[in-house]
Image 1 (cartoon, rainbow, N blue to C red):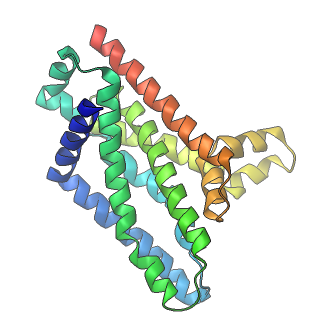
Image 2 (image 1 turned 120 degrees about the vertical axis):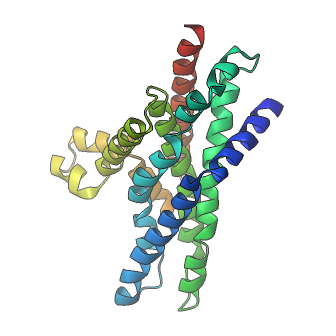
Length: 240
């Protein structure tokens, strides 16, 4: 694990030496805070539900902006060839980059801790859904990073990587939205499948404060599958 942590620290340094990281932090924190409090003071309900409802859509837009450079930057600097010819195993490289990206997402969530603190000042805030919401946010963030990293491994163009990430994540998020899944009608297997596939469904379940192992398994399995596929794609390049 020593090489994984070394690569993760390298990735974190690269992320925070880039203005993209600070743009990510600002856009994410501003969007989430502004959009939540805009409706919070109108509804006057002591709840964080509206805040976490925004999370899947925000992730679908901003996370591809972080992952789009992970493989492209290595190619640009010529360090990807060095990594591929080094004795470091491919899964170490992929996992190091994943940990680096997840660290940025975790920092973004820490920045938003002022939101529940402020809401709690206005009344008795139920901390169960808040804790569940943040746990779900970390798990969903990891899943979105794994998917976007996998997509970015297919191209050297950061713009193409970003657009592909946004398109796929947005499609997955919208599959679990009521106005999409309800179109298939109650009991329809297509709607049920759409809700099962979508990370939005599992995120909302955890966000209610009820920790279901099936939801945890979904996120862990999704991260595992896409990180494994990412390793396979890089391995194919490695052996060419």
